[in-house]
Amino acid sequence: MDTITENILNVTLLEPRQKHPTIFARFDELEEGEVLTIHNDHDPKPLYYQLIGQRGNIFTWEYLEEGPVWWKIRIQKKITGEGAETLGEIATKDLRKAEVFKKYGLDFCCGGKKTVKEACAEKGIDVAQVERELQEADKNPTTRPLPYNDWGLDFLADYIVNTHHSYVRKSLPDLRGYALKVAQVHGDRHPELIPIYKLVEEVNKEMTEHQVKEEKILFPFIKELVHAKDRSQSPSVAQFGSVENPIHMMEDEHEHVGKCMEDIRTLSNNYTLPGDACASYSLLFKMLNDFEEDLHIHIHLENNILFPKAIALEKDLNP
Image 1 (cartoon, rainbow, N blue to C red):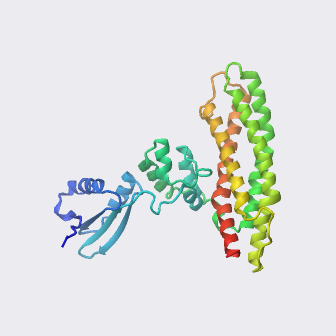
Image 2 (cartoon, helix red, strand yellow):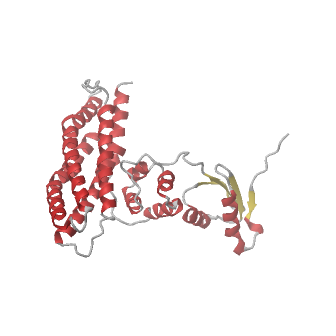
Image 3 (spheres, rainbow, N blue to C red):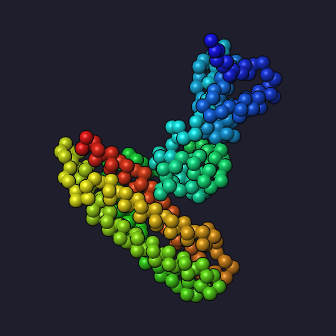
């Protein structure tokens, strides 16, 4: 009969200076899904923080025995993608962590269905570094973010309209005006300003039509779903069928606008001003950066919170 050899490391047999290096070496040898069990004569909690700080959130930590004589801990290397949260799910739980994603150019709104590992792999970014910074964000004593995920869908829809739709409508006329002006004045020396202006016009057209469809069609239907649940009634049948149909359309349009803003950022070299930039040039780049920042939160609230919850609610009402 085959016997299974447990991967056990008795840390008490090691010299103090060799303990952590040996544990790290044994951990690094693990394949995904494999386990290392360590035995110690005290709680090795500092090891947990060092391991997650240097290797990232790629393992599980389970106490098998907690003193008073022995502490035994089962450390298992996670399998890629198994139970891993997506960027959108992480940002939904704590929007402070979106700052880490933005720092590394990881799309948590349109591309929010990817895991951290998948998104980092696509951009050639060190996933362990990103995981470390996400862990540090938990300790950030900044103001608690708004609890979007706890709000009712009708309230969230109104918030999106009153905050983000309103911001888009207020900002786009000035963005278009400055994009045109700066392209006309500086376009001969900085030809990238011409396609930037065209992309701003494309964003304006897309967002203007997009927001009307949400405010006139999709959001009212989501509110109808909420009211139907509150009244314990069946929702009315919409001309577009399931709520998933307009949601898929809105997500496609989000993807298009997000790509336009990404192209603007690339063309502008991350909004880097040239030496001959005038005040209008500087203001345009600041406005574009601010618009993109707001758009990320705007799309995140819809793609990662409002839309999936609306789909789930409709299914609950129509089992």
